[in-house]
Image (cartoon, rainbow, N blue to C red):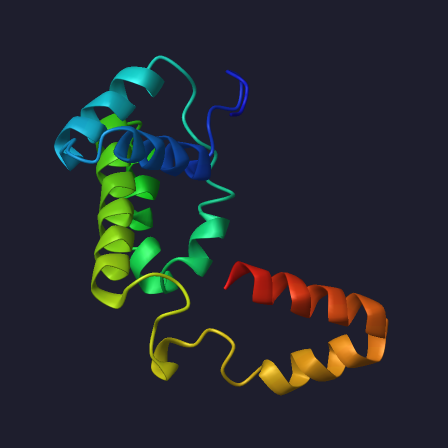
Length: 146
């Protein structure tokens, strides 16, 4: 988490909301928002230069996990922790809904394949720059995860 001078990042807030949800999946979104406000409202507001949640791109399409970011930005601009928390919760809810409806990563249909259109370029780049023994090691690791 960021220091008290710069405040938490938007990603820090999102991770905290996720952690609360993971600790107690029955917790309502409203209660998580209230807790976010309680925990963070005494500190500095998040910086606006980095309104992103990078690791979420692997969980859900950008239009889902970024749904609440305009609310977060408006909350920061208006110095309103309730607005920030509402935006964080909207992004969390959209991400969870997407996962619930689409299934876990790796079980989705071809339409949701994040590597579509770049697979050939990735294979070409990996083949050109990665030594063969590392490619084999990575393939074994991928098989072990399955």
